[in-house]
Length: 94
Image 1 (cartoon, rainbow, N blue to C red):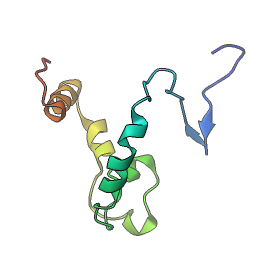
Image 2 (cartoon, one colour):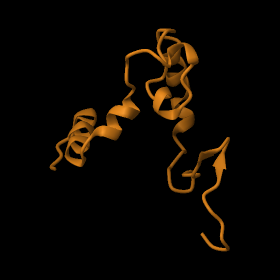
Image 3 (spheres, rainbow, N blue to C red):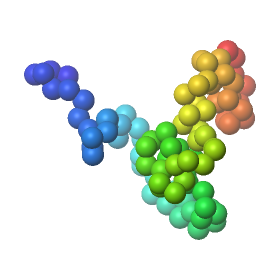
């Protein structure tokens, strides 16, 4: 960044627009699938990362469950590679 500009944020949180770097052309094709999946999620769960994002409802802030954002943050680089490979069902090497 030039001219003394810093990272710009939204609502006081850091934000970087990745659209120029990510192919979003197929996102529209995912819309119906995502909407269907959202109708099947139990209502008492948050999205899995709300605590680490700081947007958890106050009624759930004190529950004993960590979210995946906290779990990922605690992973070592080899653990992160291993978890990523399992999710992708791919052959990876550490």
